[in-house]
Length: 395
Image 1 (cartoon, one colour):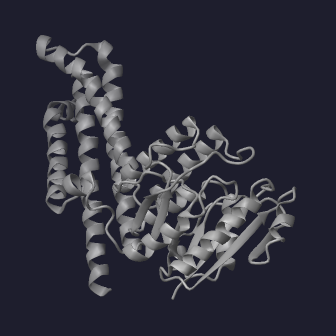
Image 2: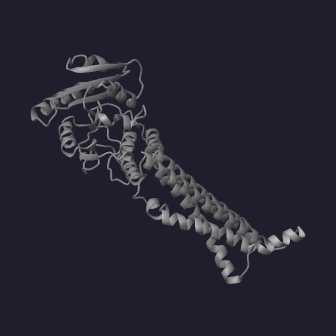
Image 3: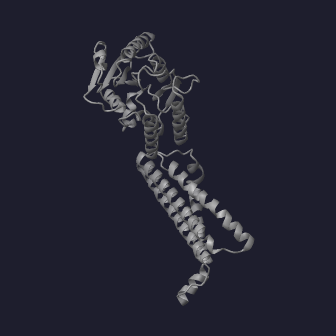
């Protein structure tokens, strides 16, 4: 039968560490007596350079393994030290500040075994009542919503500090940060790796002592970690949105000059700045989308798996039939730019002068550059598609 290792990082937690250990020892007894299929439970406390009596208190409990950090290395670093020293087939962790109910380990382990999940997260956000401060509730709901959108999988608590997972998935979760942002990074890695993640509701209480979480500083770190980690798996999710936003802004800016031209059949000189901006937005937007698509294809080749086939891009843009049309649209755009400026080209070739209105040149340049980008995008995607097929054939 599998064994369970519970890792508890602790930094200056002399006021709560004793009670936390007693709760974990009590649930250890329940886990073994309930016979849910776990044969042994080890408890590891990682004293992360505490300057109070945390380490001394832990030494009063011989059933607990104590590991010292000579200096404070961070919450994530303490957890990773515990994971490295742990012997269990299952790994679990919780904070030492009394916020998480240790007794919930019994249910988390039961769900892990019954569902054959890779990771079971104790969610503080499923139940309506929670001891979490209001501002942190908002932050956690925002990060959970952001991660749910990124990975296209519903999750309610991306940063929960209480969870159980199979030791075998650790290599796929690494690298993980050393700070408090380890938990959202772990959730992001797990979901992007296609692991089975299950959430179960747990209680949450106000911590004992002063919180070490800085709402703004750590909130920005959480956001950066989620976005950076997700960008390693599905960059098109972000670059595609950025590109579409720029193209949409170009369309909005184009409404006025197009309406003006339809009414008066004129393009005024004062519109040149707006039209140049539209050209830049369109071409930059397509460039960004192309870069995101290229990155996704490279990652899919490296990881030997598709990147979110259910996404908008996979369904409606980067399908083989659609890509052929994008290439065709690109060639038509290039041809249109040449037809539009055929007289301009002829005049310049024969007289070395141009007398046509600047709007023809600007429109032609926009069509030509957009067409080139679409043709290149189509060519790149086709090339990478062939590489993927060759990889699949020889694997």
